[in-house]
Amino acid sequence: QPQAVHLRCISARRAQANDRPINCDTHSSLGLATTGQNGQNIPPRTPLAINMSSPLQQAPPRPFNYTGSYAGYTPQLNYGRDLQTEMKDFEERFFSTETQVPVLRVSSTRAVNYSIAGEAKLDSLLNADPTAQLLTHYTLTRFLRGSQSGPSPSDARRLRINTKAFHALITHLKAPTSFLLGLSRHYQPSGSGFTRAREGRGWSYWCILPVRIPITCKDDAEAHYRSAAGSNQMDPFHYIHLSETKHDIRGSSIGLLVQRRGGGQVDVLCVSFLDGRWRNYVEEPGERLKEIAKGGRHDPAMVYLVYMTSITRWYNNVLQTFNSELIEKEKMLQNDIDGDSGRIGNTELNKALHIMAAHLHRYRSELARLQGVADLLVAKRELMIDEIHAAEDNLEQVRSQLSGVRWFANELELKISNILALLFKNIEVSNATAMQEILRETQRDAGYTQQLTVSMKADSVAMKTVAVLTMFFLPGTTYAALLSMPFFANNDYLKASPERVWVWAALTVPSTLTAFAVYWFLNGRRRRQMKTAATAENPGGIIMKNIDTSSNNTSTED
Image (cartoon, rainbow, N blue to C red; front, side, top):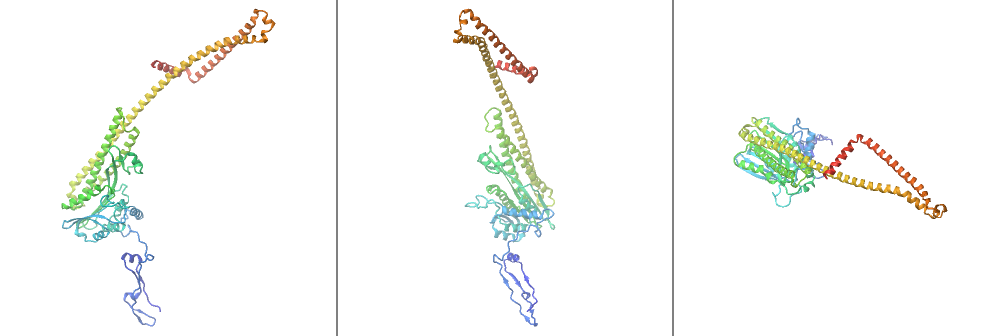
């Protein structure tokens, strides 16, 4: 029978999120009676419960929406499609399957509590009364070596938070999408953002702080060249190995979001991308914050002071290591100039200095970014209420320290330029010395060539003498041998009287004269041809004269 039926179906995704079955009921599920064809009342029906826990009936999980209804989304600053793509890639590359978030809390009674929160405990902390804590500091780090017994997990290089816990954390903090996008591109230069609350005296400030750390390394240079990053140290995005001081300068970054609520409560989110092997550096800011909190301070200014002073000191240590490396390179170059055997060639030294110069340029730009953060904190002191006013002198000290470190970087850059100039001068001297040695060897070769020419000339005179004597005696001996043959020797006319010797003379003398005439003719023509060719190639004989003079000088020196 036809009935007036209204269907009400709850979506599968919403039912799954609330962890309850989907109810598809009729109008009677609302407690209302329906009317049949004959007008009789039909009692309300029992709602039909469909359990959607079956894998075939469950819908796939929907990706977290960083746009639209997300409180921290600012379409005037970020492009939603690009943000969604970048954050999806960031989640796949950096999030772990487990959650271990260090949380530092200072309660309204000034009690300091520090704990490592798993997913369940983090969820309870986020749902607790926000006014009960004066300061809540969340830290996201990679797996810290030595923090737990046993082998490191397979995803030790990922941040120790899973995707679900991260979404809950940023939703609770209403983290700006510009900050999240900066985290996804933490290896690139990024700015910072300051936002005032619409109501009350609250504000939010985020920044991505660059970090450089000197790490002791005992591997030789060849071991570093085998890796992709080690073989591409000219790129300052990679680390640099300082062979003389046995240090690696490793770079990373720290994302910092500080929020002050209208009631004075402070929330801090620190995302540290430092390698877990550098545990002392990773834990240093947190240890300092605990010490300060136990002293009774919980204002946001101390958070900036802790991170800025730690990073400034690390940069200063990096530049000190650079300075020690440059001193060792300069000593080696001086020893090479003085004639002592150096441990490195000019080509390798030139390459090492250019690599150091490229990294130093990047350090200066990163220090300028840190200086910009300190300048903005001072510039916004009127909006950040009393906490920044109380720490203004400390911030000025941080700015002074950053200024000193930047001047130190400028000094090192000039020092590299001076060493390169000295290196080029040394290369020029080495080239001049090598050229002089080449000229000396050329002169020696010219002397040897001249001696060989003189020797060949003497041999040529001897050969000519032999040839002249041969031409003089060869016709006579030839005719004498012919006339002594039996054919002529038994001739009655020739043997009748010794006076017949004039026949030999009549044959020998013309033949000898003819041979000498032909020789002188051919020799003269060859001389004229050589003289004509020499005149065509060297007009005036200037070059030949210089060569002869040089040869004479060379022979004199020898």
